Image 1: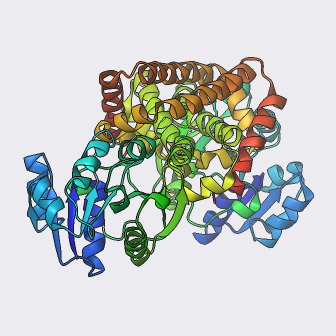
Image 2: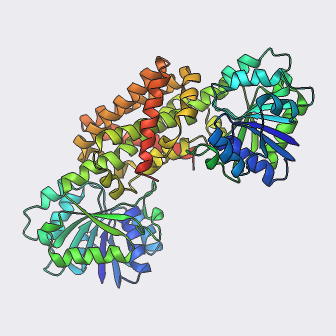
Image 3: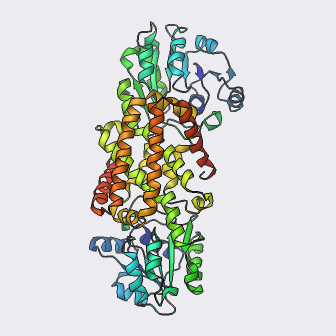
Length: 280
Length: 280
């Protein structure tokens, strides 16, 4: 199979490696606007050659859009404008409602499958691409009833070969849940990093006290603005809704601490502990 | 050496295992108020026998206070009331100012070393005790100028044997930095867990979207109220100060998202990224 990947960063690059490692790609074409990143991607074997978007889409069996989410809806339309009846286009973005709305009535909508693999790291660019990505994770497929059966089957088969498990959601539903489970965690982590950078004037002391829990809550704060500004803005209403609740929860805890309300804090922490039933 | 550990939970229990694994303990006595936990601690070999606080302190070369931080200052006084010139008392608590103030003018202050090993997990109780704890971590010693040299040397030697590195701080300084680097992360994590539990009515969808970053930011939310209510209240003013800044940072991001301020979000995230220079 000939695969064309637009965007050879963390996700696109890791997908390229995974396809190659499983022997699923005869040839991988890549598009990457940034010249340095393109060169790095070639050096790392994430693509066999860099081509234009037009050439990539026209010649590949599978086109993969792995660019920031604000660019995906138009690229999806442009890709669908170019594909034939046996070619498939997928995206890898973290938001789905805007994309699915934009392509909804495209004549070639059936050739598109909206995909969100639940895997990532806080690093970005071709140098962040990893072998073995996606294994053991879920991959969300949205509105598969609007995709042709063979296109869905192809995507399911490829991800199953990578040991990922397909789960199915409506686009709006996906964006709502993604705001709760992923996007808010990034906002919190960015804010926490800036809190500490603002308040803690002695970096040395952060090193000294490493191990106190900070690393895990702030890990996501290394994630890139290129990826995350578009996600937060495209999922604006869901993110704002969860963010308001999160600030409210912090204000409740602040008031309890101010009032030495040990009982209130205990109830709050006990309730938070029940997250154990959901994550291991 | 005979060691007496008051509180055979995560920290006290892991210290017991570490001392035994390195052959540093001839006998380990333990005190544990809760009968079930005491039985569990004995089953797991965290102590050879359960004794009264009085017997433990009087007979041990080293007494270790590993109970919640609200109980440590008085236990420290009571331990110092009972020790002789060659016995040493240490604590393992996450706050230090209140403790160091309470024991400051005790006649036997020199026999006490205030210790905070920078290691922990989100689990608690004897069943949470792990082998190999503390290795590769820092251990903060506070106000060592008030401890006798042999007591400090004993503690430094023991933790070095566990491959931990002593670092030195004033008690007030420790509590300030611990609020930035550890305590605020716990508050954020509890609040985030409650946000999601409040907003996300479909647990199933949290499982489906696992891998999106939520796990790492919410891991600490499994930490126990017994441990954390006393820490947050004892370090109240520092925690409130950092918490106010954190809520402010979240409100700034909220306003940027509301206004579609991509440039502001980009600057905010770029700034947050600089946490990379501090944590790997």
